[in-house]
Length: 142
Image (tube, rainbow, N blue to C red; front, side):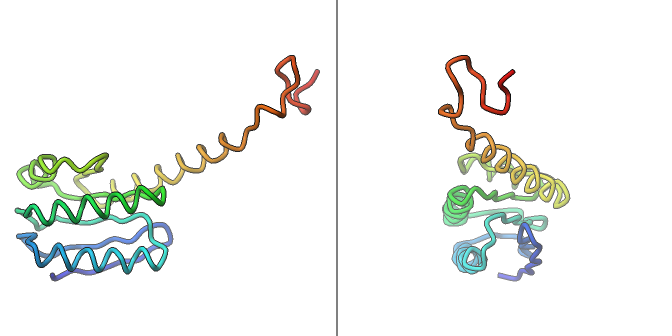
């Protein structure tokens, strides 16, 4: 599989330079993704700009990578503006997949996902036990 990897603080961008994403390439992408996970990257942007076809093994690997990203509160973004290729991805029924037409939109999606995770973590810090019987916290009490 011909590809390039660009590593950034919050995500890794994998540019895949192949027109047909077949079984052998799927296996290699899995190896690349596992290496990135070990390095601490949980947000992956996979740029399929030149891809026109994908095998069922490719879909299976994308499902696995998506699950690994989600498990770590990360995001896998698939990038393609080829409608036929996007249809193949949609037909693959990858749960909660994010497919966008440009890398820039993928980067924005990663940042939005990180912000949502931060806000969610902050709201999880709220403890009902901190309230008195009137529904006020100690700092809110009139």
